[in-house]
Length: 241
Ligand code: F6R
Image 1 (cartoon, rainbow, N blue to C red):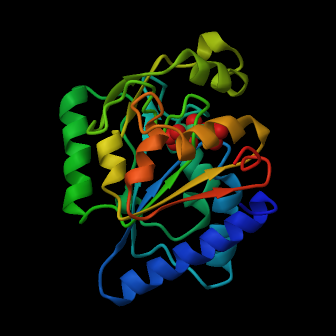
Image 2: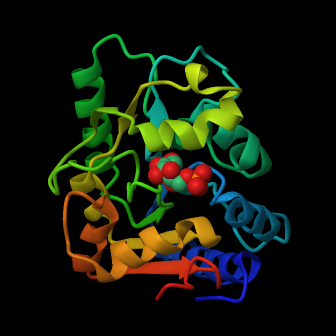
């Protein structure tokens, strides 16, 4: 628990930069699993600052995003591909061919999802996975009921998740009903995981995820069993612990 999100992101970004450097020094690309939403914004700002200060290069980084809304038009301002370009990729030296984000308009959903899983495996698995947490306890878009061993697939968004997204879409009627998301099993195979949460609104679900029963009703609770998963919280998000 940190006094504020800026400090939490400063510490985590330094750790991630060190991880990327040490993996690159060992002669292979670092594989990062990335998240979208409001939570990672100060973390991406800090990664960009480190890049501009010459302390972090993404030239040898491969990224896999957790999820993408289904059915948004190409270049839609709320698509997660647009988000990642705007908030991170356009500011750093990522190679476009190393960026992986689920396709939100797939012709054959199950074939695309299987190919996404294979691409993660072919890259050698995820070294570091960044997560936020939804009020439903979701990681990625693994809403209540998502099995522990679920893989990348089409998911239906929980009404609470759609409600939380409504302001940025200009109304609930514009929020997609479905998404493509890495599964709980996909996420839990990452070698190192950091979950970020800020503000009062996340305090009760953070408490449930960390101290409640391990259950598919709160997919973040599966992180209790991961050998290297850490929650980075501000004082408000950690206030019920
Ligand atoms: C985003 C994602 C979601 C969000 C979660 C929190 O890629 O997979 O799990 O991390 O919905 O969203 P924010 O950060 O907007 O509160």
